[in-house]
Amino acid sequence: MKNKIISLILLLFVLISCESFDEINTNPNQATDASIQVIFPAVTASFAYGLNGESAQFTSILMQYLTGVLGDQQQVNNYSFIADMSDATWNRFYANCLLNIKNIKEKSEELGATHYAGAAKIMEAIVIGYSVDLWNDIPYSEALQLDDIRQPRFDDAAGLYQRVQQLLDEGIADLNAQSSTSPSTNDLIYRANNETLWRQNSRPRWIMLARAMKARFHNHLSKVDPQASATATLAAIDAGTFTSNADQPNVIFGSEFAGPWFPFFQTTFGENNVAISQRFIDLLRDRIAPGLDDPRLPFFVSPTTGGLYIGTPNGSSSRPQGSVIPGPYLNRREAPTPILNYSELKFIEAEAALRAGQPGRAATAYNAAVAASLQRVTGSISTAYTALYGSEIGATITLEKILVEKHIDLFLQPEAWNDWRRSAPAGANNTVSGIPNLVPSPSNSTQGAFPRRFIYPNREVVNNSSNVPSVTNQDRVFWDR
Image (cartoon, rainbow, N blue to C red; front, top):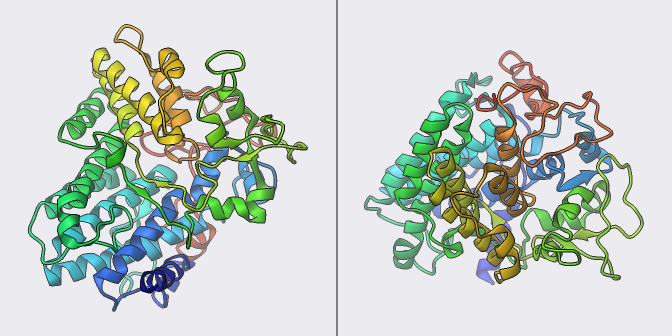
């Protein structure tokens, strides 16, 4: 009962976001006087919601996992972005994550709690990298100097990516150091029953996560410097990271408080504003043979009572009669909230190895990724599926095979949009698709040009107008060339 009460307080604490930098100064939800044991789970909950909340809804529409049929979601489906679509994610990252991470780091230094600082720096790095992937330049170096700077400047995105790698390295170093105290049951990512078990089992996995994230962000630079990106990606993996699904982080909120997707699907917004895209259903239907679907389909999508999979075409303004709803993999209270799965890491390794001229390693990593994805989603590995899609050799592996399978694996995860943008040909205009090949929504407002970034939130434009860059959704982040 005590744990449930604490969880209630924490989630009420973290899920209310402030609306601007001005409001952060007086935000009553900021735990400046709370202990690191209280702030830490609050940050991790907001961190998980930020990665898998509103921004994931919009990127899933852009990637045609979903189609928006009403409200803001329909506007995104039409590529007619509105200024407030970024507000919730932006506010959650700055007010609930970065400011409280700053508090954790300060308190950790006072207490010698370097393990808390290490985990906090890893989350900070992920938030900054994720934000750059959405918005490009963002406030950082001046963003949290609230007493002195009310309108922070925007930092260069490429420089921020270097800071991401630095933070991950610092986090690893802190986790390898002695610490006066460590997380335990208050770690929502790698929970342990006591500090001793956390140091034995959870601390190594936090380090694995940091290295996996180093690989992900290095791999994002595939257009900037293909070979250096591949080398750095493989080096991060070879330093030691996830070896199975058991190592990957999954925030499971449980029966009392669900993760981001379930409450969205259960509200009128989820029920009325989005639908499962017919394109994604068609990709998984009959994928093995006529009448034999991708085994993940019934987990991603719940069939009708008649066993049918009726999706909604992109650009539709309503859902067809009897159209399907999201399946039990994510549409349940206890669904995992992913940060970076083992299967994604193996797909990253496969892509980087192929780019580095190591096709044998690429094929081996790819085959492991396909098997891990099937195991994670369905609980077993389909021999029929792996015979067709998970049995590559160096002579047969291709980038398209890697990214199409990764696209299926990343169902409703924002990372899919990063891969798609990276795989669009360098220098091509915005009407050219990446992998998988997408057709622009018929209702698009951009003459068939795909969006390549988020626009800045309206409240930031209003409150920090002298610094906010002027952009449209047709502009690109620095690594998308």
